[in-house]
Amino acid sequence: MSLLPLFDVSLITRAAQPALECEGGAGAFTSYTFGDLEARSNQLAHLLRARGLKPGDRLAFFLQNRIEVIDLWLAGVKLGLIVVPVNVLYRERELTHLLRDAAPMAVVTSRDLAGLIPAGVTVWEVDALTAEAGAQPKSRRAVPADADTPMALIYTSGTTGAAKGAVLTQGNFATNALTLVTAWGITAADRYLATLPLFHVHGLANGLHCWLFSGCHLRLHERFEHAKAAQWFEDYRPTLFFGVPAMFIRLLELPVERARGIGARLRLAVSGSAPLPAEVHEKFRQLYGSVILERYGMTETLMNVGNPSAGERRPGTVGLPLAHVAVRICDEADAPVPDGTSGELWVKGPNVCAGYWQRPDATAAAWRDGWFRTGDVGVRAADGYITLQGRRSDLIISGGFNIYPREIEELLLEQPGVREAAVVGMPDPVRGEVPVAYVAVDAAKFDEAATAAHLRSQFASFKQPKAFVRVEALPRTALGKVQKRLLPRWQG
Image (cartoon, rainbow, N blue to C red; front, side, top):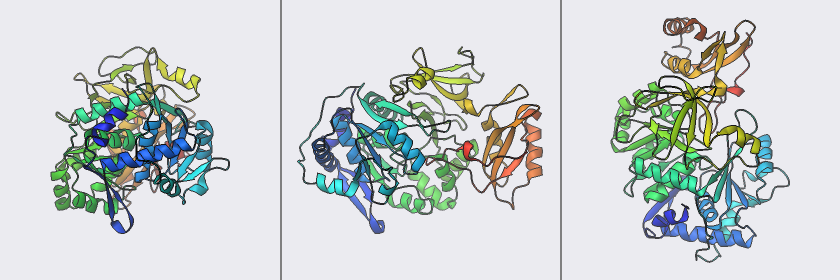
């Protein structure tokens, strides 16, 4: 299953239909039909081929959200290129590693970001590239492809070392989008407000592809801005919104009247890329009258598990395996565990990437007999709902007892004055490790003694944080995932 025939349901058969509006200067928007997108990407494909790119070559982009990212993606599909999205927050060390590893023919970027690209890497400035493409033919130029054709090299966040490139195929992307469009009932009548970065699989593989496959309408913003979000929702009146927990937390700040109006039109709000606290799930339901659908995926696998669109969206869980995915929960001896027992999630299906780019060692370590070891710890209820408990690498072993940080973090987030919380293991001469809680708080509302007392009433003694370390905010990735390795070192 390749991507282009599925895209053509919109690009060709809906050519005259409004497809997209992009934010421009002074709050103005430029509109495009699906036929416009077909023509623009054809012109760019002609230009890229003239510049020497051929199937299997890597082409990177280092861009904020803009229509040219869509042009590049579609042209890459048509030419059989391997597209390399690059996080716009990356800087010298990260960029040097990624671009050396992927070795793209060129990096397409904007004038303001070009100076960050390491010396020796070919840079194509996006406005000049687009202007030159405008003189090319609008006829389609495409090469044959199938499900195994590599489509993208997407790098993991690198929270446990240097980032690795996951080789995602056209079949991975096609399976993922077809499943989501079906499971979430997305149709051409929907309106999708897109604020997620297109360099990440959440915005790209879910958002962009669900839009193209369904033929719905999309409004693209450069990034999420909480101060403007309410006006965006009210002006555009979306039925779909995909976000990360940090976005939904900021949306809780709206007055109830505005929130209710937005929620009345919002058919589907999906959260992913980081755990959604059950408290946020419930507060959003009360404020907006709309129930968030939380799901679980990874760079390497796209989507694995999701709460049902038609059915119970259970707070604190990521739901049930999607139609194309098999899930197994295993212990440290690689044996499946019974329901109700914690273990590592293993997944298998056509959504799983082809391996890590030029890393046979990492590829071999991550797969067991066709199953991908996610590194995520979770538990499955008797009715199949899966709850994540954190990363296997985050597991704290204190005096021989296992501690899953998320369990403590969830309770901390319920306490007065606690805005953010992260629990990490710190070395201890007696117990090996002890949990330490990093909290961002409202000082006037936070009572450390009362919080500690409440934790003692709820958890075993070995789960009690050794200390509370106050921080202004938790360090996060562009998608809102906490980077625990960047927290200040606790001096106990």
